Image (cartoon, rainbow, N blue to C red; front, side, top):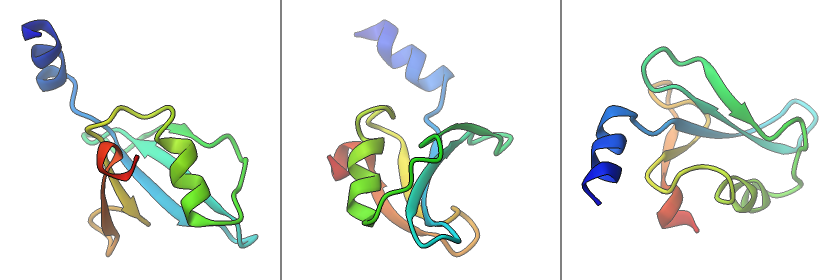
Length: 86
């Protein structure tokens, strides 16, 4: 338990963005909270509904990651943590 807590403190969770693509489908991407580089995406899958994109990301992103609609810090609305959304 102590090891997991130390790991979580040393390795902060990514910021996850759920957004509508130009083709009208929903997608997600995970960014490093420090340098904002993209760490992972839905692989171009595209989802018809926002909820479908969220359902997919909760399968692969750690539970304490913050999820935003659009980009955090750029007017993005906080949706909750992955754990809260699953």
